[in-house]
Image (spheres, rainbow over the protein chains, first blue to last red):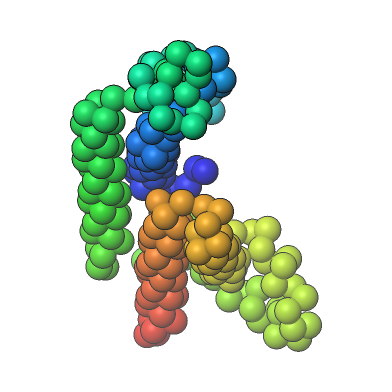
Length: 140
Length: 109
């Protein structure tokens, strides 16, 4: 993953993480209406834990950052919220259905952030490419 | 008397590459690898082509993986952009080296 075009690689790791972020948001939104009988396992919202990638000390880069990575996927609450819906086939004896804890508003603002971040990384990639091309264009 | 011109390292390399090519003309490609250890022009050119080949192969593979859904679009973009830059770098280095060699070759007595 390391080449002489490190600027492009680093922006690529950012785009990679943002892609994962957008994917998890998509999963959360897609599963927000997965109602289950209370007590059954309910869908847990997924959140990306991102962390810095650092070149190991002594490798010549003096611990310079080499990008970002997905450290882990955190999960939302394991117990969902109960809604009274006695006509639902999965409702329990009390007429309750358990839904995942996913807030659509939060997911949408996260999506805007993820998209902006993806675009920012694409922009870094584009400008880094222009910079590298400028140095390659030097004529004798 | 005119003092001797001190040798310039890069010209020395070009001279030795000329010698290596002269030696290689008899035994074809065999001694090209011998010249490789001495950092010659032929070696430098060969390495540039090799790394270029590797970069374009990698770009092709990652693009195929992305098309098959196993790699991300970002991966494919990074790989193809880097292959493009590698191509330009190899081309620039080769142009400069050939220019240097031609300059030496065109020296008039």
